[in-house]
Length: 632
Image 1 (cartoon, rainbow, N blue to C red):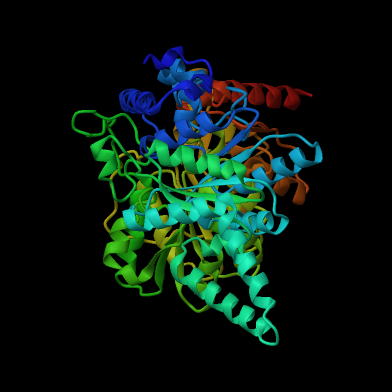
Image 2: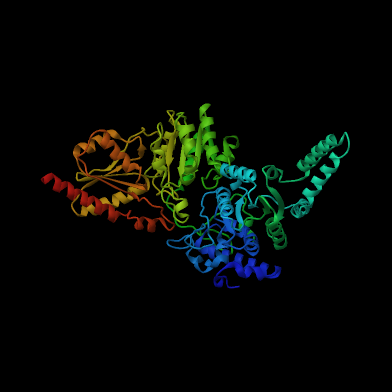
């Protein structure tokens, strides 16, 4: 079938089992072929092919609302809703998003790139439906990993309490399917859905209570036996106690089981949880055999061998550099414990986990728990290393404030993927952490200019025993600079003048230092000498150096691959106001007050005017303005 000809999913309703299986095969072939070129979340999507087809066959999108949690498994949904022809642009600049996107289709009714949000959003949509007296189904599809998020559990509790009509699909791709257990649950599911199981329980209790004198006691005893049997033989009791009707587990690759169970779920009143067992990566051997998450999301690969197409790199991956330096230091420091919220692969912590299994904890998708667990460790004299992506640290803001910084605990936070991250787009860009961390008391924030300085900053963080300290580092690889063999600490709050200049000063850090140097070269060709400062400590700032710069009265330009609102540049200007300095021209360059979509980092930087040319232009204008002011 030519999948690019699909305009909407209504055609699926007319397909028989054989045709559905043929469609599933075509979709898998399409995904394997296309993602080998563009990269993307291949494992999750290969696992939900039949499930997505079945959902569109039984329900009517967009009247019935599908909420994909985390959202990276929505590629099949995109294909069935008319977007197959755009897959060559997937995750590219101005192309198809790797997550649900309302602007792309009326079938995308909830945008998500972070996990565990679907149930709360679904509850809101279901309540709105009921208030408006509309007739529709709300179907959140949530993975077993996302279900560990505290927000998901809060939503389950509320949905069950309110008895709201919702059909929750639990996409479980970790558990193997045991045919005997599956058959038992299939039978129980049919009985419950038909109402017979609950009717029999009610009738039995009614008859027992009619027995003179002893009926009440017998009924109570029977209820205890019944509950004991339920806890003994029925999986899903957890969900039932929360107020859900539990159906499953069922084979998520069997169209007959899927359709029958989804039809059961449609007939039920109140919240229903359908437990679907799927195989991540199904249909492509390298992805099926993956046990550690390598094929969860990938770059381009060779279909025949499963080998990844790697771009040439100069230096080590930043994640590996930081985690390996922590591991090296942990050999002589038993205080060091590593924690990650479901990112041991991305944060390159597998070697640490292998060497120190008793000092490594993957807590699952539970960022708030990870942060406060780190605080608890630090409160007892340990030195926890919390490896967390910038975009996920957003979810632990209160824990950073209330549990870590307020108590001035010695937690080392490794803020991975700081800055623009590219293909994953607006939900994953690590550009907000400076703004939401800089105002927290007791916290040190730093970012290195290269991987050599990065390893020394890890040493600095481990040796820092005066409160929490955060190290920002970007996605990707270092520059391939020479690495010192012996590690040393860097004095907290000190900056480094990389290039002298009398006409203006550029203050920047991390990934934008090369941009500053390039701009300075352009300005030098114009006869302007500009200083470049490695402002490696975002907090505390080097106020001694700032005082010197203010005294000179020359323009100061700040550059940050982070949001300008509340960012590093704002901090420099706040300090100027604090000390009563008004004579310097300030210019700030960074991420504007907007969400930046997906695309290559280079193209995104051009779009938001963060280029050497723009820096040179802004700096030259500031120098000219300062010269004109001096004439007055």
